[in-house]
Image 1 (tube, rainbow, N blue to C red):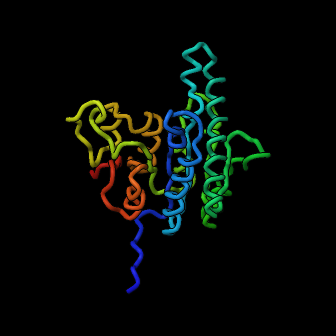
Image 2 (cartoon, rainbow, N blue to C red):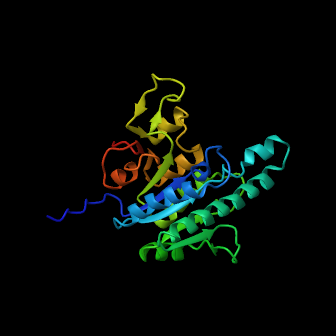
Image 3 (cartoon, rainbow, N blue to C red):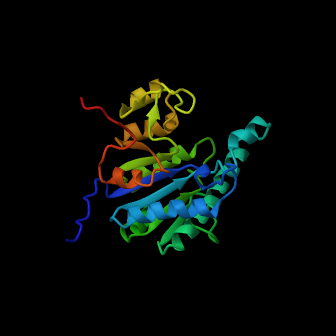
Length: 245
């Protein structure tokens, strides 16, 4: 008897990845094995019919705060970080295309030799054609994080959820790696997330999601079934959303 495909809850998602998700054991650089692992997860999701857009950070290559703390001009440090996100985007694109997943990289900082410029309508068209779209270059402006870039791009392309992929299985009231008694939240309101200063996404990103009623789902990327279960609507991770009035 043929197994029936599971219904999906989300038709279009924005997956927010940290730069560290591409790094090897030392937490720096790009590990092709890690890139392939993420690519296989994305391919599995796409094969269910979900349209996938991705924003990736650059913490494995450069952190703007590191440069700023050393006396570097903040805007310069942030631009360096934005360029590093394009490097990560190209690495992930290569891993996906080696799995025969058609992928496009769009950059908020124009560099036509390596990536398309970010054009909202073109990005949506790529998604409609079944291509994975990776957004590099952050928002194109200093002083904004890749979390904010993820919230902005998700809103612009009409994504139904921002999936924040982490190394833990949700949001806790304190660090579960340090405090065994840490309590995991199944659901949180946007305001509770901001008021408790929970490290879901930065305040600007959470506020942007709140203003556009865009839910944020935090889950463990390294659980091989978490992403698929999430798009099928199963209770996975922590959902940040508008509480019903």
